Image (cartoon, rainbow, N blue to C red; front, side):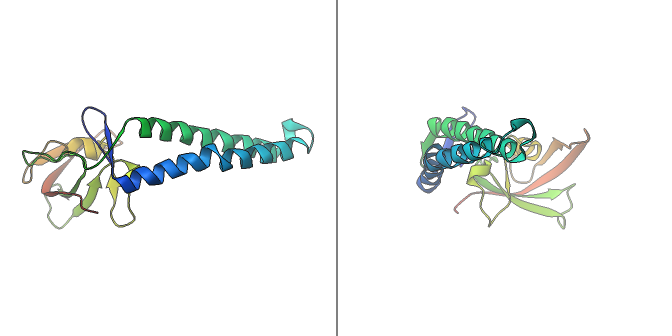
Length: 166
C-alpha cells in the first residue's frame, strides 16, 4: 500500500482483500466475542474493582479504533498499482536504499509505504515518517535531510530507488 500526494491510498488486490476480511471479522465475530467478555465480567459484581471488565472495555476500545481506521482506509483506497515517479524521484511504493551521512558502508534499504502494506521481508517506513518525508522527491545520488526525534537534523544519500515488486 502506498499513499500519494492527493491522500489516496493505493492497495494491491491482495492487501485490499486482507484488510476487508479483517474489517468483516472485527465488525462481526470479534464484536460478539468482546460483548460476551464484557457481559461475563459485569456478572462478577462491583465494576469499580473488576479488572476483567476494565480490560475487556479497553480491548473493545482498541478494536473499535481499528474498525474506524480500516473503514476510512478502505473508503479512500484505490485498488491497483500506484503511479510511479516519472522523473526518477523517490515516491511512495518504492524500495529505497540510503547511506547515512554519505557513508556507503552504513546503509538501510526500506519500502516507502504505509504500515498496512508492511511485509516481513522488508522494513517499511511511512511516507509521513520523518525519514520517509525527508527522502520523498529526491533522486538517486542526491542528499536528503530529515529531523531526528531529538530535533537535530540527519543527512542521508539516496543510493537506489526502485518500484516495489513484492
